[in-house]
Amino acid sequence: MVKLAEWQGKSVFRKYGVPLPRGEVAHTPEEAESLVRDGKVPLPCVVKAQVLSGGRGKGGAVRFANTAEETRSAAAAILGLEFKGEKVRTLLLEEKLPIARELYLSLTLDRARRLPLLMTSARGGVEIESVADAEIDRQTVDPFPGLTGYEKRRAAKVLGLSGPQSRSLDRVLDSLWKVFMTEDAELVEINPLALVGDALVALDAKVVIEDDATFRHPDYAEVRDDRTELEEIAREKDIAFVQLDGNIGVIANGAGLTMATLDVLTELGGAAGVFLDLGGTDDPKKVTEAFLLMARAKPAAVFLNIFGGITRCDTVAKGLVEALGGVPSGDRFPIVARIRGNSEAEGIQILRSAGITSLSDLRASAQAAVEAARRRA
Ligand code: GDP
Ligand code: MN
Image 1 (cartoon, rainbow, N blue to C red):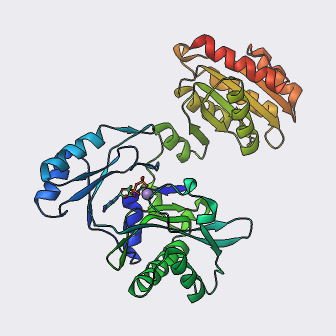
Image 2: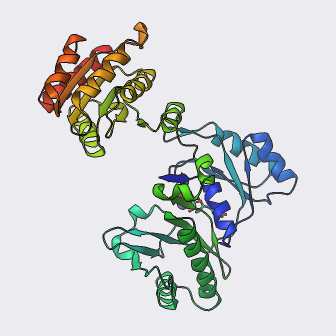
Image 3: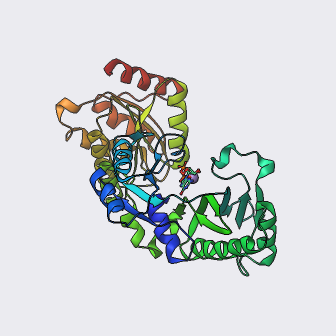
């Protein structure tokens, strides 16, 4: 999933003709102030944190300014924030428009019906999850004709737009549809879509590009700045590795088992700090590499939960034991293992020779991992 920051989403929108406020990106309070002083951003303006989480409006990450000085202090305040765990490094400054109404508009995929889905609501400007279902209109769209007059008229009606306003909506919808299809998006969302006079303007932009289509859009590889340094290294080595907030390192194989493992740990009061999905590999070297990467994240304990199939238990055990030699002694951590399935006996034997006991029960082993991490914390 390639999730674009607002300013990146808006630069995509601009290419396709979605109407936007005038705006510029800044990285320091000084830069923000000079954008205003040089007239590149008209006053009054809006200063917005460029983070990937939503709810910035409520969370103090969107501020208004009437003067260059206010712009500078708003920028300084926002750059000092850590918004939902993410440091703010980039700002978007935009002219502040007088908005009459805030609407919601998005295109996404209805995976059950395997069709694009147009969602509209007259209650924009708040997170869509908090809008009552009855106030969101959903229309599936046949991808071949694309959005037709029918869907557009219904959207206009739902949004309470007529005359020149509904013609403005038609243009927004045409542009947004082109973004969605051409960029292989899995979500394009405008919230709020603001009514300014008789014109509609996208005040916010959320664009998520389908992972499987990124090969068609090499530009987005650079755009992706939501990875940690270790995640970046992992990606280059084609290792499924994600850093979380907890302190237990989880090594599992397959997305399902990995997620289930995280759930069990959470249920038992633990918290995963990193997870590594070994997927299907038959190369112990790959396991070693992945494990060393996990060690660099300095987990308090590691829980290895493997179901041997294509990935054999002995492959994992070999790779892991090999890796242990490469972990600096100061960074050592207890390992709790649970390996079942293909070549289980060999795997258990290899682990035992390295002093690692393998348990067979999921809850018992998860519990042991949680306790080991707690002792070290
Ligand atoms: P989010 O809370 O992270 O989704 O951030 P948004 O970009 O949606 O901004 C939050 C709110 O700030 C919007 O719902 C608007 O009410 C307000 N806002 C943003 N830009 C403008 C603007 O140009 N003019 C006015 N009046 N309000 C704005
Ligand atoms: Mn928004």
